[in-house]
Length: 431
Ligand SMILES: Nc1ncnc2c1ncn2[C@@H]1O[C@H](COP(=O)(O)OP(=O)(O)OP(=O)(O)O)[C@@H](O)[C@H]1O
Ligand SMILES: [Mg+2]
Image (tube, rainbow, N blue to C red; front, side, top):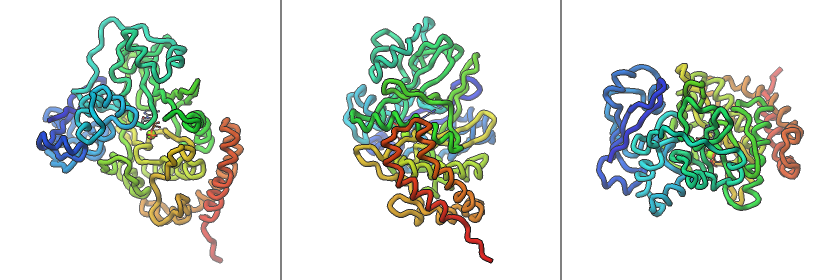
């Protein structure tokens, strides 16, 4: 029971490492099964000491060592089908949803995830010479969630288009230079122009559609508030089109940037774990090439999470991106939406230890927690206090960004509470 892990580096997929279960019986435990992780000898020889970008995970620098692990390495959980994608592959495998399905799911659905690593056994078959002509935008919108099924019926290759995590149904598409859409992996790299993640409402409720529609407004609000976002997202007929920041088309080929969730870099081999915010900051501090800037960005994103009711701030909703210049940085913001509207009632997932009451952080206390990361609490308090003005203006900014009016009203009190807490963080000047 062994999976081979490939990495896309220097324009090609290459075998980099493997993870082998200790015994076949470990499959029963799912991702809690023990095993051995090691780099491929040739890969290790060629990439030893070449930095985080050549490694399959920040936690596992390239080496000759065999690592004995009591459960799967956390980076494999970024690739393991989850959410809507898990339901899709369980259906394909005809398996019930239990831990025993994890290994077959990894081997089936880990072939084309965002980022630059994949499971070799799950990788899409090499492309046919005759490429499919692709689909028009209207066909994608018209078929919505059923687009991939539709493309399959039209004999277009679709393998790899579903290999993305998250609760909401979604698929990966690549647009060619003529604007036509293809399932991701169905188009040769030199023909690719732009890469998209297309996301649909999580369920059939009105609130699911409200959340997705307002994700667009939230993107623009985040940008107006000075946060780091990717290229503009767009919403059409209940489908959210998100340009992928882990891919760049060059005309000659495609660059794939590594992507690793904060959950993975924090060594968490689990799902739905409520990781303390300061632990996530510690992981950013450890691996970012610019920890000061990235921790600040992460904390300010959290201010908006609280003010705008993005309660689903779990550790897989933020990632590090690995650039080809060797730097590792906090990836642009994604999955930023009014999740408090969800009918299932999503509580705030990650919190500041000892600095929050009922999901409402006291920003002065957060400033004190942050001093463990080389920050000067007084300066952080001052920054919080001056950000209070941006927070005060959020209703106005939201309106400009076309958030729903009723949503702005529902958030008004919350926004005000966050503003007050930020103002109270202001350092006291003693005479
Ligand atoms: N712009 C992007 N570029 C590259 N990868 C992305 C981008 N946006 C999201 N992803 C990847 O796709 C995954 C799923 O996207 P997203 O988090 O938006 O879905 P979701 O279904 O709303 O998730 P959740 O279950 O957290 O609600 C993310 O965890 C991330 O790995
Ligand atoms: Mg998500």
